[in-house]
Image (cartoon, rainbow, N blue to C red; front, side, top):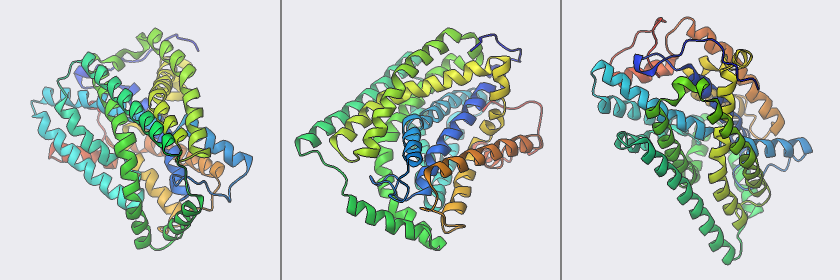
Length: 410
């Protein structure tokens, strides 16, 4: 990869301009999140410890392994990092405008929680917005933390979470190893499939029934990792590392070297344990390993995108991601809406009827359509529709709809 920087304006956060690289990374993260979420929406088996036996071809297995190895538990970390980074930009924007940041941010979190609750109950139980809203309170309390301290706290969170999984693994091994009851998992998956193919009320009922299991996953796996990524984003935002990413090529190259040498190995172990030995002591140990290696692979992905964006040729590949990143919340919710219309009783009710490769193909087509739609929308409007509503809630005032030359920091 050539490191010749392309000529482009360097947006400076303090002046309130958008940092394009943040939008590009957000757009990239959206694709990865969709690739993971659609596997859960398309099949009620996925996540129960038993994959759908009707899709047992080599292509089906290969797709599951690819998604588990390279996508699961990676892209939500990147999205969380950007949430923490954007937090620092919002604080600076409030300071420039003389507004009380705490009040604005609390209103923003309340709106996110409301959106997330609706999303989890109606569209997809695997929502992350409610978790972000709750963890945002911690981020607000830690807003004056020094960057070095924030990084140390993030590393400690990853380490403690990984150690917790290893201890659980040892305990389960000593108790006999555990494992998934295939018959029970198959029954639950079939019942969930029938409910998701039913009426809208039946779909919502199925989502409500899944929420307790999802909550356990969020509390013990995603929440600690997301908070750690928040803190890393906070530290990076305080240092303004993305305002001149093209000047940090040696650092980005080092992140790629470390992440790509360690991350895929951890991902393979995680995929093998999750798909072949769910619920066992080995699975718990693999989760602990993934807590440590997934952030490294996510960092390598981000470094690769930033290096591409810093070159003339690479910019042509990454530039289409920026509009999608500017409308990240709209896109996230729209992805779930369209998948719900496609796979549940809200629409075509194709849950359990689409193979893993086909589901991955649908995700790629959907994301491509979003790239086109976002570019069209932002030529005519300043914000995405949900971003406009969130900004209204944050500022307690209706923002202008029309597109302007000067765009506030995200």
